Image (cartoon, rainbow, N blue to C red):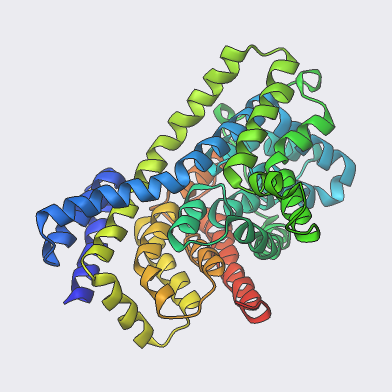
Length: 439
């Protein structure tokens, strides 16, 4: 009975979002209420589960996602991302341009959310391709592979951050393991796979080509790199010192504070406000306006995360989560593979990587109490699955197709294949880490 209700819930989400075009938050909320009633939850308990699911989920991720969006917006608006790309492509030479853009995507993709990063780097890709007379898809795919993988795998991006909270994983360890998994996936799907796509002709539409900022308007090189990577530098520095200093050290309380992602991001935003904003002639109101725009950009994503949290909590409150966990154990697939497969199937049906990851997480949550799966690796496995086989129902598919002015078949051959490669290689990396690491 419970499995049938869950199946109907997933089908209901697919129908509401894909076919009825209902807002994802409303779809999650509607399905969660229907599931609660179908599983026999009393109205009072059902509404309490809705409030708890919404509050607990958003309470654990909102500040991190919002601060990450603010930093990414400032990195984009200030020209720091453009400076990073210019430095890397100039230093590595024409022969290694795809590799340079891949590295640039890795660096600027940490603070930048995917949609913002895509719009930002497309003019840079077209500019580099035109300057060196190289195919645009061959040049751009490695950079977009970086942005996509970081969006699916690593905090502070929305879905991985939400999954860390749901699974009570460590944000720092998930980030570290995520980098180990992400880099091989990006290399295979980016520079290596892009070699097979040099024959794809892409003539971008004139309306999508904008002039990059003039070099004199860009922040300095050191400023650009350090300001963009501040959260990583602060977190890794604090965690590294914690590992070598005794717990009784006078620095222990300060390091414990700096090792918290919220504190690291808040400090990064405060420093970047000066280094990329005020120090470069921008007024404080102008910087705050940019931050306000960043909050507007992530508000719909936060609502989707909250809606997914409601559905998860309804399953917990009804007792269905325990039955789900037991039934999933009976399938015989390892939890990491099962989490990847669920996310991949939902991604194919719904198109959205964020919704796929969050929905799969709600279904997989009970397995944590029935198995010894590493929660950090489960976050990454589901993140990898959520990127699989992007096709015609995914907004990212059409964004890539229209900006590069490609046919459907060429978009499937380039974009869809790249997303599927990073998904499969990502799962392989997670399984290797699971074999090498202690729980």
